[in-house]
Length: 317
Image 1 (cartoon, rainbow, N blue to C red):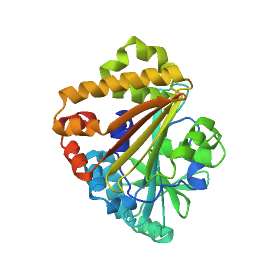
Image 2: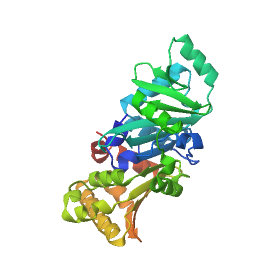
Image 3: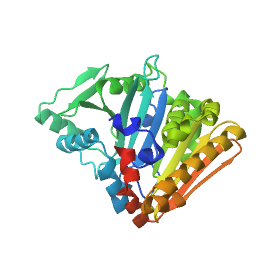
Image 4: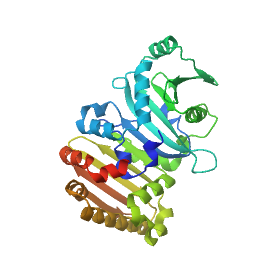
């Protein structure tokens, strides 16, 4: 599941799975299960994406194989992901003292027949392991486990990631609720059907990969450490819309990153095919008061053409 996050670039992150209408809101119990050192949080209105053909095509093209295995395991466990799961969240967080040690925990919200699911686990002779009083169930052939933290919320992922989430939820480790920069960033985007927030490290990694060769120049290195956080929202209502904001803390850093990103877009416009050029033409980049803003809007048909382009394929493989 780490594949969902390690290829960090704007297109990959926003194309993971997409919604179409209502915002994807995290409940209090869901937020309380996310570790403090979260590098990126992605939240998706999973039910609404069923209403968009473009969103479903994106989902099929970029969903990692291990997440597809999770979908299959959910259905076999008695959960119908198309009808029971309303929202999905994925939190990439640091563990230990090294920022290179990363785990991913997933959180699903919805209306679940918990008793029926437990009965199905029992029928399949699936035995839970206890983490304190929490029952953690293995999902066959995935290497993942699942644990309900309340009747409408469960966490899933590797046993290590789920244990970390349960430690936070049970008060044995600090959680995201005390991470002020992440919580403040969430306020700007958590009404979108798909949204994400990234901390300082996540933002720097994202911009390095987005800029490509431009990210190696001295100008970028001079402002890289000033990148504080970022957030984006996306929806598929009346075409495809995407809005990204990067907080730098000062106007000079925002203007420098804006210039570098604009140069990268110009290069891609010259070297890309027609669909790539059309997509980049629909991208607006600006900076103001220490924040860099990227806006993208296009039709479903133009975006579908971009999905088949070499630019898109190079970013997801």
